[in-house]
Length: 104
Image 1 (cartoon, rainbow, N blue to C red):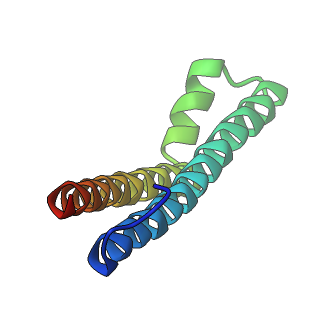
Image 2: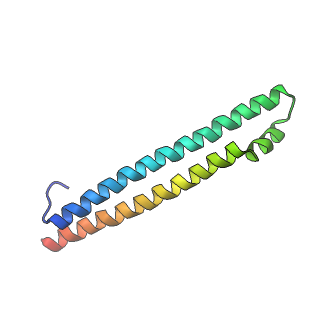
Image 3: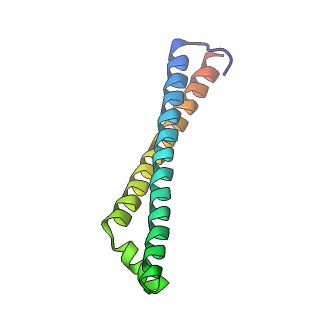
């Protein structure tokens, strides 16, 4: 938004921008947790293959491990936070646009 008509509009826009940044950070954390899960799953599959354990049994063992559960929990948590922050940012952008249109 190039120009602001009021301080209230500027504040709503600035808050929306900061919420977007927080949402992006939460998505980075979620992606990192998902990557941890994927790498752990592959490493477990390779480890089990060396021991002669089938792929399906390796997946069952991985999904029951604490590392897998923690990675999925972290991913779910951070995705939820990102969704919340994106929603709040959208509401503040809408507020800024409402204030802009009202000031005209």
